Length: 171
Image 1 (cartoon, rainbow, N blue to C red):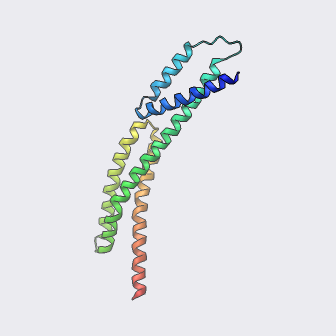
Image 2: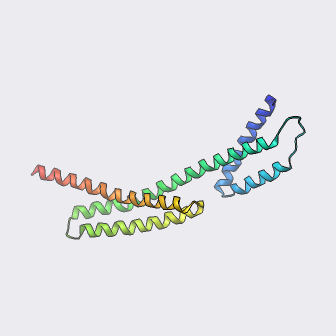
Image 3: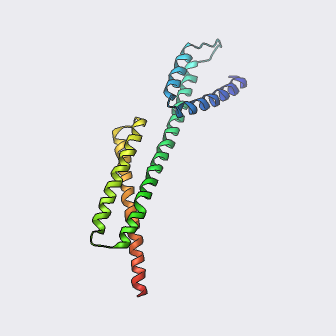
């Protein structure tokens, strides 16, 4: 293989990666991959020992790797978004309920946790449906979100318990 072909191949990959990223944002990436496979099947290069199937397979692997990395980044971004929403929706109300410290504090916290978790899971689940994930993967992500909501409440309860302990020591 000549050095010129290597430079051409690198430039082709860079151009394809740029266009694939743009199309993935527009959710048209699979269409591009299909077009590339169809066009490369028609392409013939008259060179003695060149096998186009190797290049096509490498291109397909590169595209699949890039799609997987973009997908993972988008899923991470989505998870962070919903975790942030849960933190915002739970932190201040739980803190206020714990400060008030009445007989119905814990039932109110449980109800708040249930309501906000249900709301977040509903939105997160519908957002995940655009990714065509396996049901088992979706269930794992939803369970992680539920556990995150519980951890927010637990951390606020621990903070308040620490404050109460400090107040008791001060007396």
